[in-house]
Amino acid sequence: MGRFQKPILLSVILAIGLYLGAMFLGDFRETQAAIKQVGFSGWSIILGLSLVNYVLRFWRWEWYLFKLSQVHIPKFRHLLYYFCGFALSTTPGKAGETIRSLYLKPHGIGYSKTISTFFVERFQDLLTIVLMSGAAAILFDGYRVVIIITGILALCCLPLLHNRKVIKVILNFADRSPEKVSALLKQLVELLSSSAVLLKNRELLGGILLGLVAWLAEAVGFWYLLLLLGQDVNLLAAVSIYGVAVLIGAISFLPGGLGSTEAVMGLLLISIGVPQPVAIAATLICRIATLWFAVFIGLITAGSLAVLGVTPIANSEFSEKGGK
Image 1 (cartoon, helix red, strand yellow):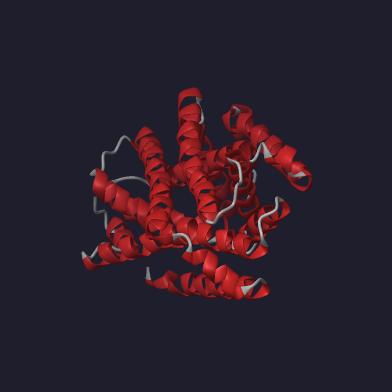
Image 2 (cartoon, rainbow, N blue to C red):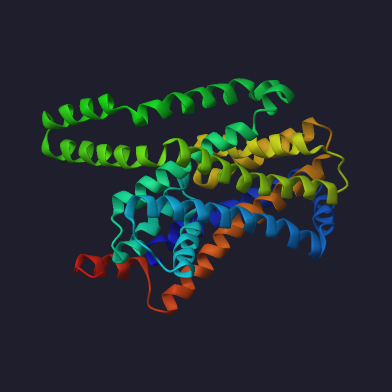
């Protein structure tokens, strides 16, 4: 993880700056008091619901990866590899999470399989978040267009991923392109072909269902947090606010959605009558319990594996020597 220390450190510094800035823009003391209201039991439940999200998404990842590779990996070891990816969640589009491919390569799983699985997961998460944000299109006029356009684009992409004519056109173009461009296009075809396997009816619906339950767990944690802070916000509104905030963060392509997710979440809470200091506190706690809790788990897991001599760099060198 050495080569990734700088971007991780920069994202942490950026987050601390944003969060302290948000607290000082509001009433610092009131925000601090609201944070203290959560208590140990409240934190335990909220973090527990985040863990439900992580484990369910791992279950989907494991199912999909085996579907493509037919390779069995000891479950606990595979879970550790999966969690290591969370250390790089604060990258645009969470692309850094593809570091899992380096851990998995020595087990005989090619990069194309892990990248395809990652791509399908992100695509399904987008569909899931759009579904969760659906009520927000009615509750919050300002976000209606974004939600509808994102949903339409995602649904339009789905048939294209299954279309053999699209793959044939790309291959024909690759045959007439310079060597480097041709190689990239052929890799794209391999990605689309593998992804299509995971986007058939059973895999698609099962993956969306798992993703929906996983992300709803975090959204329910957000709703429970608002209750702890003394805010009578109904579950549907809380889920919608959480969904819209995560959606805006995802399509902004900012590292981990930093700034965009927090801003939207806080503004929507204020728009439904939540006092500003409480809205700021709820936003900060939610992000700590979801994004930063995942990053913390990822760093601890990667560090633990490194102590055992298992690192992404060592794994990639091992695989280049033909190790299995």
